[in-house]
Amino acid sequence: MNINLRCCTSDLRPPIEERYKAKLCGENDGKYWLTQVLDECQAYDKQPADILAMRAQQAQSRPYADCNFLRKPFLEACQQIRVL
Image (tube, rainbow, N blue to C red; front, side, top):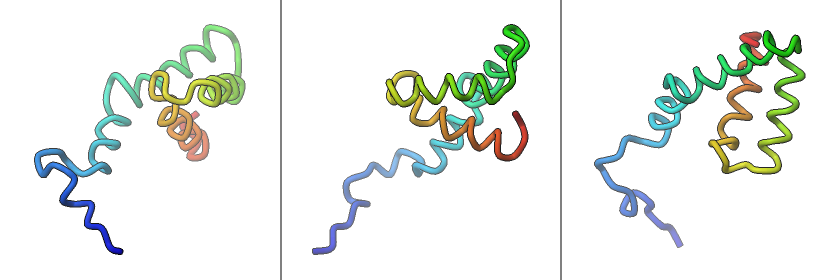
């Protein structure tokens, strides 16, 4: 059985990739998450890996709070490309 999911989505909404990109590049999400980690590193004299470990625990225990299911892979990707 082949189901066409296009019929279930509204043509008024942008594709999911665009929505994720907008969320992660927005001032109140991706950029904020990145700034938050850098600020916490400075405030608590910690390395980014320490803060990311804490964020990973939070994401695992509450993945849907504050978009942790997006925050965790975003911050991990920032670490991989050496932004953190």
